[in-house]
Image (tube, rainbow, N blue to C red; front, top):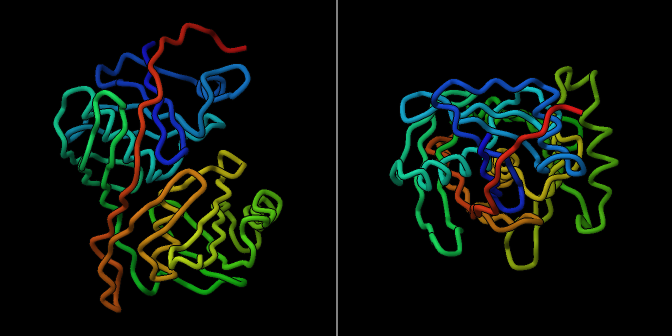
Length: 257
């Protein structure tokens, strides 16, 4: 099985072309491929299936089918470009159709910038919750401002909030944000399914931009721009823009442990 390893600002994925429909992976196999000791190592795995231009199926590193992944969407668009499918795409994902554009790609360094259209969010669906906000940007996110985010216990506090079944019965991703002196917004995310902090989260960055109004954001893995139109009724024309890298390619031949 040939695979490609991409990352979007350090949020990394195994990507596989399955437009033939021949590939069938079990939950255990996907978890093993994503395992950082025994497998390739990744925050998630994506397969490209037949679709409008294609369909994106995203699996968390635990092997289970996940919801929308913003950085995954940007990486699979870069993957399509590397396969020679063009620069602009319309594809379907867990939360519906998306448009993506490869704004820049360096075929030697194998790095680029990809812009991804995200779902609109109704203003009424951004609600105050605990000490922050809850909203769904393709995946559910709880966003909270904190002080000294660089030294904040993102994993410990993120895990605690992620498992607040009384408030988030299906679980949630947890984002912590802090304004930086240069005007940008620092975002750190604990992701459900990965059950750890990831270096960036596309739907989380989008959620943070919407609740804060800041369109220039920084994560541990890189910088993002988020564009949107705030009409008072909804946040429309949402676009997530950031870096993508092709790390390496390989062939997977192992069987589940």
